[in-house]
Amino acid sequence: MALISAGVYPLLQLCISLIGVTGWGVVGMIWHDRALIFINSVAVFIYTTGILKLLITSEVI
Image (cartoon, rainbow, N blue to C red; front, side):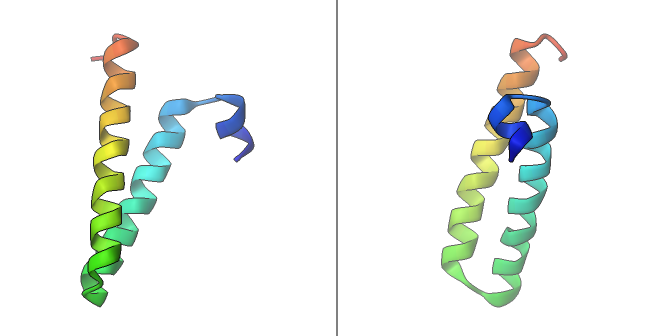
């Protein structure tokens, strides 16, 4: 949390968060929990968009 608030390593933080919400999405699929699946699918989309935006604006890609 300290790194997120300080703005240090934003790409690393986004990737770690993406892994976490993807994991919870898998748990939602295993449990057949529509709420977990929906919320984490939206979060995966948001984090993926953020990662792509960060990579494109920093001219890494």
